[in-house]
Image (tube, rainbow, N blue to C red; front, side, top):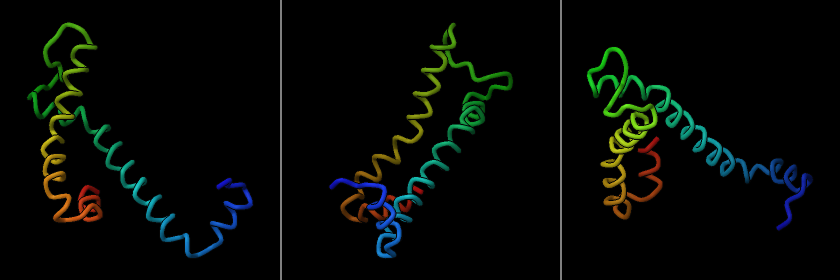
Length: 102
């Protein structure tokens, strides 16, 4: 399929495409809100984890070492949720899991 500007305009005019378009765009919007929200509050989360008032130094002399440790810890916080989602994927369904993720 070669999608031209005219073809895109026709696709957007067709109301039958709107639920799919809104579902896709809405899903990405919610993903962006949660992803960037977590990224913005990452320093706050790390301060609570390490009980640190001045900063979030983990263990290391360089910024690069501390940053790698901090990113690893934040990634590990979400790991149990991934395993639970994989375990229940066939029972609950992919759509239900995705809705719960948002």
